[in-house]
Amino acid sequence: MVITNFGSLNIDNVYSVENFVSPGETITCLDLNRYCGGKGLNQSIALSRSGASVRHAGCIGANGAILKDMLKQNNVDVSMLLEIDGDSGHTVIQVDKTGQNNIIVYSGANRRLTKQYIDDVLDVALHGEILLLQNEINLGDYIVKTAKQKGMVIAFNPSPVDDFLLNDFPLDMVDIFIINEIEAAALTGITASERAASELLKRFPASKIALTLGENGAVYYDAADRYQQKSYVVPVVDTTAAGDTFTGYFLTGFSAGKPIPECLRTGCLAASLTVSSKGAATSIPMMSDVTAMSLQV
Image 1: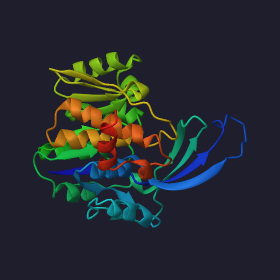
Image 2: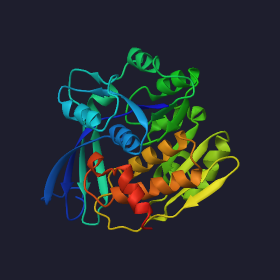
Image 3: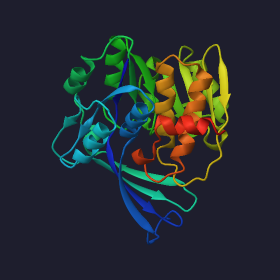
Image 4: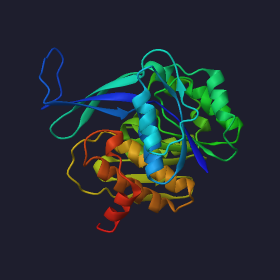
């Protein structure tokens, strides 16, 4: 089964800082590194490194060859990637001394998708295949509605949460929500994470929900079952792409029909390896690394 990932591709500019810059403050960074990133690209690489067959769909600009090459090097199908005029998406990321980050995103080519392009991509997708989507590109509602008409299974990582997502996005068409604590609170108005996940399931009872809880691991809900997975204690260097890594590894296991507890465990193991390294896509582990770690914990 091929997983089609409609997602963003960004050039990440990562500034290492002692502490995050405050309003009106000027600081000197400790280091600067550039990486390939974007939630879409990160999740495609996580899917591929965890063993899935993945097709990436999205737009890059004139400076986006590095992004395309990164996907190709990781055995991601880029045949449907669209190159357009203008700049690719890029980010400004601060990473502080504790490994926490904050991010500014310039969407660029990521928000220049057209309905015709979306139709062309989904024409090659098959009934029953999984469509993965985040909220860093435009026309997400059209993508979901069109994919649903084709009988695809919709997996959605609702990040970042914005007013359109809260008011107009067809959340009732989502089959699998993969969310963190912030997204769960934004979607439901409930700050207690597991109560928020329960509320989301109440609103969309046919959906499945995988909720990541940071250092507290992850939990899964559907109409019949609930499973919880602890996190794995590792030195935290950079939390960038941890959620994307979990998404890719969890969804690969899910698409292969593996038991949910195994999907959760593998996702948490992989995410723990990601936070142990700097960068976004470059920090996503190979399945062999995750398997080796699983034998040690």
